Amino acid sequence: MADTLIITLAQLNQRVGDLAANAAAMLEVRAKAPRSDLIVFPEMQLIGYPPEDLILKPALIERAAVELEQLARATADGGPAMLVGSVFVRDGALHNGVALLDGGKIVATRFKYELPNYGTFDEKRLFLPGPLPEPVPFRGAVLGLPICEDIWHPDVCRHLAQLGAEIFLCVNGSPYEIDKDVLRIDGVAKRRAIDTGIPLAYVNRVGGQDEVVFDGASFVVGPEGALWAQLPEWEEAVVETVWNKVPFGNSHRWRCQAAEVAEPTEHPEDIYCAMVMALRDYVNKNRFPGVLLGLSGGIDSALCAAIAVDALGADRVWCVMLPSRYTSQESLDDAAGCAQMLGVRLDTVPIAPAVDGFTEMLAPLFAGREPDLTEENLQSRIRGTTLMALSNKFGPMLVTTGNKSEMSVGYATIYGDMNGGYNPLKDAYKTTVFALSRWRNEHRPRIGMGPDGPVMPERIITKPPSAELRPDQKDEDSLPPYDVLDAILLGLVEHEKSVSQITAEGFERATVERIERLLHLAEYKRRQAPPGVKLGMRNFGRDRRYPITQGFRTA
Image (cartoon, rainbow, N blue to C red; front, side, top):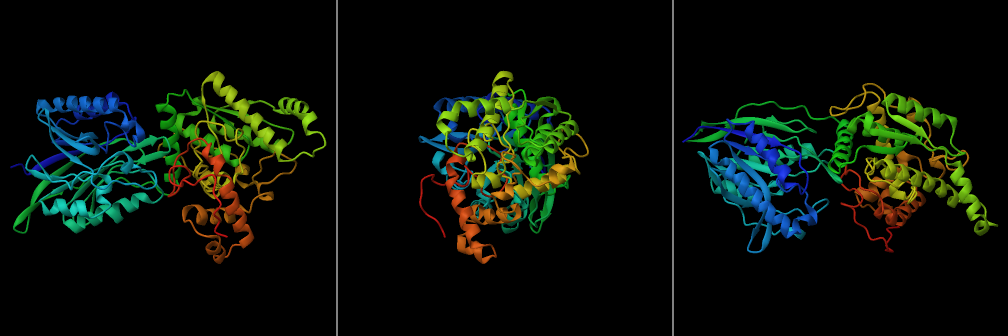
């Protein structure tokens, strides 16, 4: 009976639905780890995660079965076994599961028991839960194979422990959220290990997938709660862990030799890296040559430009300044300064001719009416149309730059500044935008491709925000100060508090009522907004799904 096992943790990226490429990546890892006994890949690594309704296509399920058999045959050479996540059909039902491939065969399959059905997860709509899983014997060890959500509840691990499991190998597709890395280790994995007395290896994927991003940070914890190994965040990593069977009382237990424990990404770098990785993978996996964005001289577009350069490199980022009669020289100078700091191309396309053309065209119908929000929105829509024309003509994806504060209260123009294919700031409140901009001017992110040093003029961060759609306009003419607005929105959106509860925290009732009203009125706009990376506990779209037409208010 073996008393040593080498288990390789393969923290990989993937492309949903690209089965052949995902399988090839796993075989490449296997070829580079010949001395391993077992290579463990993230949840549904063959299919990609989350697959959403793509998983309902019979052709995908059939092809996945073929690819899995081919992967199994690759293990006939006597080398490393592989633990591979995929979709499985049993008695006509779909299951999210893992297969142990060894000796040229699929020697065991286990299905996910706890199906998450909250926030970004919709698994009960797609899969049926498997039975409580049984342990799997493997080369002298007894493996328990909980899958992701299975360890967030105690039943599966306790069941496996009672049946003799000696090592938990947990495969995961756990998306990034602020502070979630601490929750995974201290709040979940260590509890399962301590509760059962069994060490647990946690393998997570890394990379962006539409509106979610995976941070990796795979790890191993011991039965006393010690952190034995941790892989880095925000990058692929393949790490061997060496396990020895050691005496324990009258029996034995498996223990992982101490390995490298990567330093976690500190706040707010973690948020910034999430934005960078999400945009990078969205652009690259959808095969865009680069990105295009409007650079206004304001903080939102400056931060988006920095994120884009860190994600793709300056040569794949094209910025365009679209001045109107209300654009200040200060904004022109700040946009030019930001572009120079980032090393990106900057073109200027004045919108006055188009504004004049629309004004003349609409004059007979607008006669007798004073200029109002209509004329302001017209400028934004001309800018959006111009940027989309450049995107269509030359190919780069248009990035939008509205933050969560603005999107919450509808301070954005549909078919104008909301035009685009992706929004890195969609789940970032304005106060977060300020914090990230200050941080990026002083630090370079660990996964960034952009320059060291400042990436935007300091004045962009310190000057009062303005849409510059009318003379001397400031955001705070229409909205409360952002520190007040964001605190109210945090209560309304993230915590579903009532107007009375937020008022009791010291905010003016009339202001809270107004913000709640604007939040509900803007739902129709958010339904038509581009996707953007999820950062917090409740992003718009995947987490917070409100009806457009509804009459309930908490006031």
